[in-house]
Every structure is written in structure tokens, then in C-alpha cells.
Length: 434
Image (cartoon, rainbow, N blue to C red; front, side, top):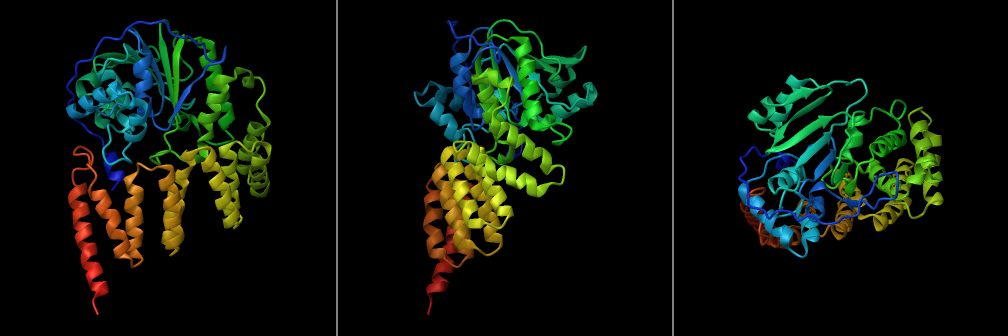
């Protein structure tokens, strides 16, 4: 159900009126030349209130991401987003409802930049497309086709894209956009907002031998440092909540944020990072036992590092130490609730093996971390029904049926829930019959 909702929306968007931004003094940071305090979000859509508050009359967005977040919006979405940004609880609203894992999303994460452009946040966009070194040039014909087919650009916008040396330029939603390679970052003046999504590293990564993750982290930081952009805001997003990216590499955003806060780490990596890098490397050299020992020891180096506990948990599962593994995962989640998505994956695995009670217990842990996620409750109801407890599943479905489901994203959910409830009622009657 959820994955089908990731289908792109190719609908025309009507521009909503938006007040002109007010130029104001803002703290300017030159990333990796001096300490910067980034804003870190689960999903790019949650960054919209921060972008809104930091915008000025001539703001450039530098987007470092594999996905451009340019899926179009429907007109009524834009009206809701506009209103939500005026709310005193805007950050909370976008954190909860900027995801498809909500009964009534404001927008999908892949619509984040579309919303920002339609609402006039930025006067220019620089999209740094992560490409491996051998992909040294843009194929303009292919790029036009891909962007138009995906719905990120209209057919007209795609046709008007032009090559300017090694870069591609054009307009999207009426805003100038330049697409560049990671090794061709432009010089920029005026207010700049930088957003980096975890997917950026996915586009650059090949394997731990050819493109070690910490080398990528270091290289990208130095490249940004070299440009000396006048950054008014830096935002980062994990993009692991909707399972588009694995929590295995969640640490990259965490550690990139650490580099922004303490640029001196570029000179010498912390011991934890060095050992994680070593573990990743030897794991690719068929030295699994050594890699596991290194991963296990990470939490001893820094007990406050959530990724270290997650990696210990994963290694303990591989060694058949389930009880210890669950305890380590609990510690990771206590430090960073984003790792709770792993409970959902483990619940599905347990259910497929017939361990339904344990699967339900894991779903309840995930629900505690993501209380606004209705699909966790739906999955719990499914497991209860499958295990012969329709009387326990029915109240959960009734609870879900009462929610105001989005007519844009989930128009059929109320009728589907009604059908399931009726089916469960019949099952309960049959079960209670003498």
C-alpha cells in the first residue's frame, strides 16, 4: 500500500500568492572554514520551515542530492503548505506530515523543492548531481528525457535545457537552475542555503575499495570549503524513514554534521570514525570475522554513538545472539529514534517465520518512536488477524478508519478500511459461533 503511493504526481501546479521575503541580517558561515551549526531533519520536506525562515530576496539553494525533490504538487496541497508555514508549530507539522507515512500528508518528501519554488523561497537553484568520476559529462538528450519522463520538469522546461560547458542550465517552475558535477561546484555570491541529502552519497558510492565512504565525506567537505560560499543556513536530511535509504549509512549525515560543527576533524578523524572505516574496508576484503570484531567494539569507543550500537546489533544478529542484538538496537533507538525503522524490518522478518508475538512487540516499539505513523497500526492489525485474533484487530482498524485520510494520497483508504472491518466482524462472528 505505502510503496504504491510513491508514484509520481504529474499534475499542473497553480502558483499561490506569497508575501515577499524581507531582507534581514543573518549569520553567515563559510562551511568547513569555521564552525557551522546545521539543521538536521529526517526528511527533506521537514526542512521547509527552516528554508522559509532563512530566505531572503535573492537566495540561492545548493541542493546536493540524488533526487531533485521536484515532483509536482496539486493546487490544494500548496494552499495547505502555505497555511502550515504560518503556524507557530510549523516545524512540528512538517516533521509529522511531510511524509507518506501519515494519514494526511502535507506533501511527500520528493515534493520538497517543488513547494519551495512555487512559494518563492529561492531565486536560483544549483543542483549538484552525484555522479561517479567516470561519468564526466552530462548527456543532454538523455537528461532531458529522464527529467521530463519523471515529471520533475515539464516537457517544455526539459527541451529548453542547455549545455554551458560542463554544466546544464535552464528554468524549472520559472526559477533558474544549474546542474553541475561534484567536482565543478560554482562560485556563489549573496545568501546561500545548502541542503545535503543522504542520497547524495549513494550516487557517488561504488564500494568500500574504490570509493571509501569516509573518503567521500572528506572530499565533499573539502570541495565545499574551497568555494567559501556565504551560507545563511545548512540543512541535512537522512531520508531513511520511508525506507528509500538504509539506516546502514545513516551515520554519514550525522558525521557530516559533526564536521560542519568542528572543521578541525578534517585534519584528524576521531578514533570511532577511523575504526568504522577500517571495519567497512576489511569487510570488503573477505575478512568477515575481523570486521565483526571491529564493529562490535565501536560502542566501547563511544557509547553515545547511535550508529555504533546499531552496528553492534547487526553484528550480534549475524552471530546468532538475538537477545543481545535486540538490546543493542534498543540503545541505538534511545540515542536516535530514526533507527526504529529497523524494528519494522525485523517485525516483517519475524512474522514470515511465524514469530507473530515477537513481531507485534517490535511493531509496538516502532510505534513508540513514530506515533503518527498509521501504517504501523495497520500492520499490527494484519498480524493479529492472520494469527487468529480478529477481535483484537478490529478496534485498531476502527481507530484508523476515524482518521481524516488524505484525498490526494489515500483516497481509497476509508473504503478499504471499511471493507476490512466488515470482514473482521464476519470472522469474529464465525469464531464465536458454537
